[in-house]
Image (cartoon, rainbow, N blue to C red):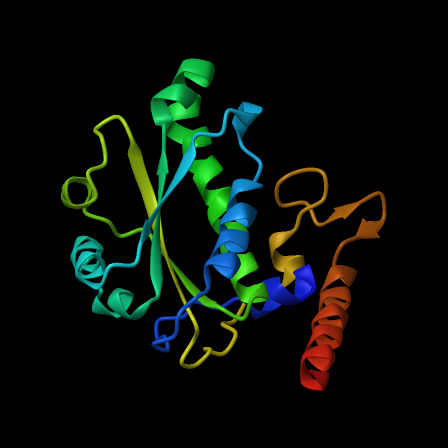
Length: 204
């Protein structure tokens, strides 16, 4: 599947089929996460895979008791060796870079899963102390998010997105024009791109 198509098709899926994800496919998805950029290439992101049904129930309880998580084939808990980032980059590394590192890995995983026709959901509502106990995570390791993966029972419709021209500025904040150049044509260009992608999807 083309990258842009996978990005366009990605949805938050909360209903999964009771179907196995084969190891080869799961490894490809994890490797996509591993290939994400990270500060200084010091590689501090870690993945904990949870497939045991009883353990998934415990993790779901730690995630605001979202029981639908138990239906996913695997839960990936994304963690960070934050003190290593902090040693290299100080407080900015701790407060920002470590989070960015795992977030970039998460996005790669979500897109790679979509490319493999696997549904996914990103969850950040986590009871830190409880999940730390459940998964034996050391105190010096930060827990950032959970990604649920499984074959979708149904795929939600695309949610409404802001117009590109409304969120893009030229050279400085709030500026939509510069030297007679207006970025408002981005609006029509974006519509054209969406139309092209939509036509391709219908042909599939």
